[in-house]
Amino acid sequence: MAEVIWTTKAVEQVEQIGSFIEKDSPFQARRVVQLIIRETRKLREHPRIGKMIPEMERDRYRELRVFSYRILYKIISEDKIAVVGVVHGARLFDPHWLQ
Image 1 (tube, rainbow, N blue to C red):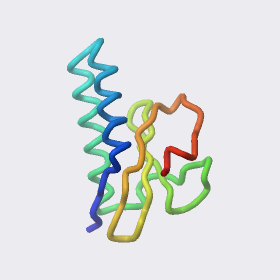
Image 2: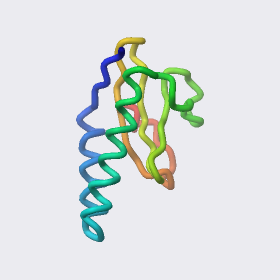
Image 3: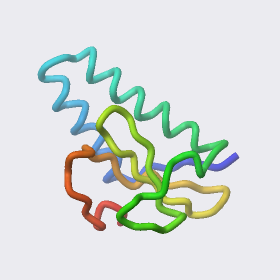
Image 4: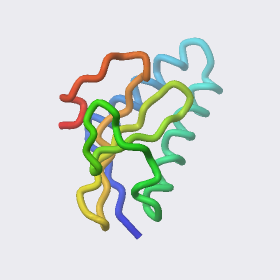
């Protein structure tokens, strides 16, 4: 089973997403944040469950989708996964998200 770690930037992005949605619906904000976290838990047993990030085309950079959000992660090793970003899918890809 792999360890899933979150970068500070990814945590901040999820908090920002929650805060933004909360303005309209506290219920939906909790739901979206919970689903994002739940999806990343799957990585512990299935690190390659996400598809390769199309803009990168590197096997170790992958993404999961929750609603319109992209959960970007990096396979550091078979035992360690890093969630490096959570961004809205409508945004143009920025390679700095992965750093």
